[in-house]
Structure formats: structure tokens, C-alpha cells
Image (cartoon, rainbow over the protein chains, first blue to last red):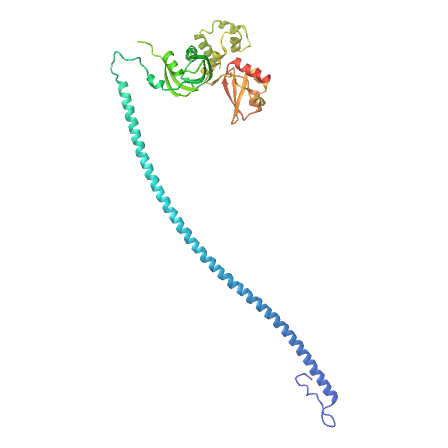
Length: 247
Length: 137
């Protein structure tokens, strides 16, 4: 006997109705089917609850995904806007750099023109300087031959008592010691010491009795022609030429 | 080197500083420069200048020079006294030595410091010795 057909196995009693035992069996079977149905209902309710919770979570995830998509779209828009701005700024910088380069080019061209003018002037001056020496005018009453006028040499300050003199060239010992002796014989010079000698130039340390115009003394008293390159209060640099023998 | 010494002696002869060159053969085994200087036939400064001019090496006067004691880590004092050399400066692995001779024996320094360059400048012997005495004092 199944739960779908509970009255199938009911047998008639002798006096009206069904047998009590059969009815009780049928009721018990119905109670059992009802209990099973309740169990199935509870299980279905639990599954429904789980599915509803999963559905809620998935809806939440979907909402987050939508928000993330919106944010991505906004970020993309911002990046595109920044890219456009950076591109415009770079173009402006390129244009300004190009303008600066053009200005620099113009400056270089002007400097080149100035350089060429100066070089031309120097060449002209050199030619003017060389021409008289190449064909000097005979002057019977000319002053003694000096490669450098004394006025140019005299334009120096009075030195202190300790002077460093850089002189040269000296090709041999005789010329160097002769120059050293000549310096020692100058009235203001108290002592002469050769500090260095290299590449035909000597550095001499002079000690003077008192501050004096050493260049004037050297120019007028030494038997040399001197080209003063630099002259400070404590350092003088000269090129020494042997004095030409009198004709 | 010998030619340079001879040329320097020629310079000194021209200056009238050499009157008794024959004595050079009378003291064998000794440097001719020392013979000249010990007998006071030549001046220390003149000889050093002649060496410098002939050899092309720089000349350096040592008057008033204060030796750097640290440089004697590279050149021991006994080597400096024996060879008449004075370490002057060390820059960029180049040690500048003031020497009274053109050919001092610095092989011990070169062996101990093979990567260091040695640059010789010529100085008067008397000034080298005076400077070394200041170190030993």
C-alpha cells in the first residue's frame, strides 16, 4: 500500500465501515508521508535560503563591478585629459626651445661676424706692425735699438722687498749665472737665489734692501734687453735678450 | 749619463771653475761629482745647474724647504742619505725626488712601490744634505 492510495488496502468490516486496524495503518502511513513532506520542505527552505544568500552576494559583487567599471571609465577620461595637457605642454616647450635655438644661432652668427672682424683687425695691425720693421727708415740720430720701448716697461708698480723673478730663456749655465751675477750687482738687490730652472726658464728669488722700482733698475742697468710679460709687486716675468753688441 | 757629466764639466771649465781636473783620476771608486765638490773645485749650485741644463731635468733649490716626514715612508732615511736624495712631494702616485746626482740608486724604492712613478729634480748636494739633517734632528 502506498501513500498515494491509502484506501486501497482498506477492507470492509462486517458491520459498516472499514476495519479499525486498517484505518490505523493507513493513518500511520499518512503521518509518515506528512513527516517526509515536512522534512523535504525544511530542506527546500534551507536550500532556498542559501540560494538567496548567494544571490545577494552575487548582486553585491555585480554592484561593485559596476562601480569599478565606472571608476575605470572616469580614470581613463582623466588620463586622456592629462595626456592631452602633457602633449600641449610638450609642444609649447618644443616651440620655445626652437625659438631659443634660433636666437642662439643668431647670437653665434653675430659672434662669428665679430670674430672675423677682430681677426681682420689683428691681421691688419700685424701687417702694419711688420711693415716698418721690414723696411726701417734710416735715422742717423735714432735711439739705441730696443725691441720694447722703455715706456711700456716702466708702467709697473714699485715692488716689495721679496720678489720672485721668472726669467728666460737660458740655454746654458754661463748665461744663467751671468744673469744671476748681474742681478746681484744691482744696488737695491741684497740677495739672489735660484729657486727653480726648467724648460730654459729660471725662477729667481730676489731680496731687496728696500722697496724699489726693480724693473726700472733692471732696464737701465742690466746688459740685457728685457720684455716684461707680467709684473706684480712680488712677481715679475721677463724674457731676456742678450744686448746687441755696438756696431 | 757619462756624456752628460762630461758636458757639465765642460760648462764648468768654460766658467773657469775647473783648474785641477786631473784629481778626478786620483780617487777611484768615488763619484767624480763628489770629488769636485769635496775638493771645493766647483760650487754645489753651479754643478747642480749644469747637470739640470745638460740633462733636461728640472732644477730645484731647497733653501728653506721643510721636508715632509711622511714621505720617508717611501724613501727610508738611510737610503736618502746614501743616495743624496730628498723626497719632496707625492701627487697622483708620482713621487718627486730632489737628487744631487743624475743617477741615484732608487731600485729599492722602485721594487717596494712598483706602481709609483719617480720624478727626479736636480738640487745642490749641500742643500740636500742640509735638508736631510733637518729630518734627522
